Image 1 (cartoon, helix red, strand yellow):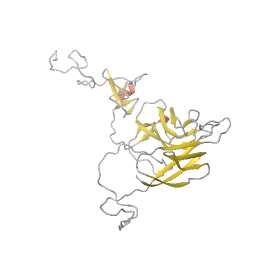
Image 2 (cartoon, one colour):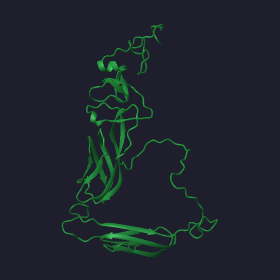
Image 3 (cartoon, helix red, strand yellow):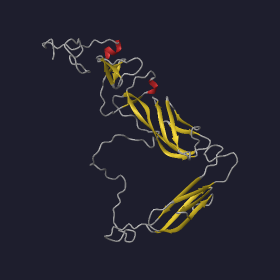
Image 4 (cartoon, helix red, strand yellow):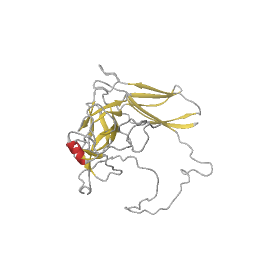
Length: 319
């Protein structure tokens, strides 16, 4: 649109801004953010930024320990008409309303729709004086699911600086950053297992500043682990269902079946399988004494010759 535009810029060391080859503004190092106005007619325009930097011996335009990066910020704005055409815009004819302010606690909404899929703890807090709720508990383990970049920071030496999680519990992280050394993404290569305290994620750097991260943990219900100190006890789990017994205790974790035998886990993985039993005594003795069900718990097609399918009164051959 035609009219007067406002240009605001900042640079390290210098920037010159041109519109269709004509200089309309710029900025210099330690010169703040100068504002200039210029007029332009409606239509497509070519915007050019000419950057220059003081030459420092043995340095390059990279954010490295021996670098001298060149940076710039340019913003071009123009006032616009916010009128609907039916009445004067609110900038000219503001509306007035009256309100009644209710101090906390405010009334709670009792209507709505939707399902809460995830709760993200932005501040974990500490020192909760309340005791844990009463009732049966089950063991769970916490695993690192992902890491959110709260603040990207700046001037990190990408590929040299290291990202660190404390405690790690086997978690392995990598990161990506842009040309200004700002952290753009954190990749969880291994989520680890057994977090009993809120982990802290930091950058080991000599040049970067102000990066901030938020770890997001996921709950693994009743995992089979050798070290019980990696587990925590929780109560009041919605949809909690006991899936069998293991090593003399109730088991609430995921199970899968292989050849009619129930094992811990979502699916078979390398290593020794952990069998889940129907009764507490079976899990103690590691011996199955419960009669198998006439209905296969897993599988598709079968026939009458299958020894695990024996229903009295049925024909010998099934079609």
